Picture 1 (spheres, each protein chain N blue to C red):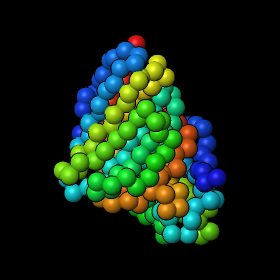
Picture 2: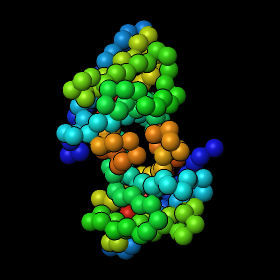
Picture 3: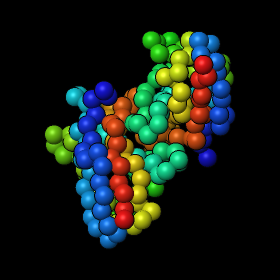
Length: 110
Length: 112
């Protein structure tokens, strides 16, 4: 079955870089990796996505391994407001259905 | 603000009743997705519509149905409600399938 695997929880000190890993070994060759986060019970927020190359935007950077079986989301200077559950996802083949795991609960500590 | 509007924000009703949740996608987005999130659980995909047509179905109960109208807004209908249907229901939209999804603030449904 297609799925993603992430650590259940992580801590990071405020101002430091937060590195969140994800394993997506079942991803198809032409499917993008997407990262979202959910703060409390708000709607998930799109962060970034990528296919093969590393990507960067105003929120984060995404590093994808050459074999595409895993990726790392990097928040370069974490703030308390980055405390959230972070989800790594991808579409299940051509089913137009995103695969959502349990996510990583990231806690930023002062 | 994601640009996706969901109404109502909160809904309280009784078992056996029927409710309709509404979603207006971001301007220009043709795809609409519905998700259910029970307390402290992950997101469960329910259904996806693209430009008025159903594109994918997840573990959506037969008591639940959805549609996307010509103006692209969508409605999720939940009938014969049970206590276990209490959850947050999120709508998301994207320009097209396989594009980043943008989520609304959700409808919190409480069944008494």
